[in-house]
Image 1 (tube, one colour):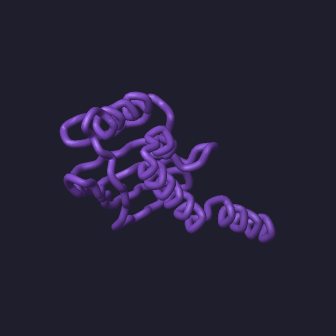
Image 2: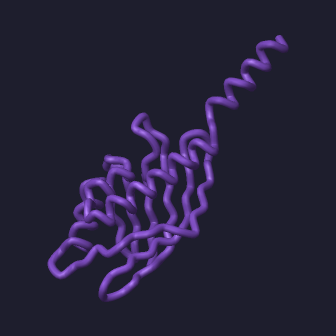
Length: 141
C-alpha cells in the first residue's frame, strides 16, 4: 500500500511541471512577438487556438474564431497606411490554473514611427496536443 501511495505521488509530481509549463507559455509569447516584428501575422496567430472557440475582446469589440481574429489583426495593422511597429510584452504574470489551463496578465508595447501605444492584457491559455494555445484574449489600450 505504501509503495502504491509513493508511486502515485511521484506520478502526480511528474504529470504537471509548473516551471516547464511556465517556460512553454513564455515561449508562446516570445514567438508571437518575434513573428509580429517580422510582420508575420499568420505566425503571430500560431499562439492562438485555431478554432471557433477562440474569443478576442478589445475596446468595445468582441471577435470570435481564429480566422475572424486574424482578419481583424490584418485590417487593423496591415491595412492601407497602417504600421505594425515593434511589439514587446512585459510586466508578465503567468499563473497555472490546474494542469491544462493558465492565466497570463501583462502589458504590450508597440513602437511605431507615429506613436507608441501600450496597454494591458489578460490571456487564458489551454494546453493542447500542439502545445499551449491562447483561447481567450482581453486586451485594452
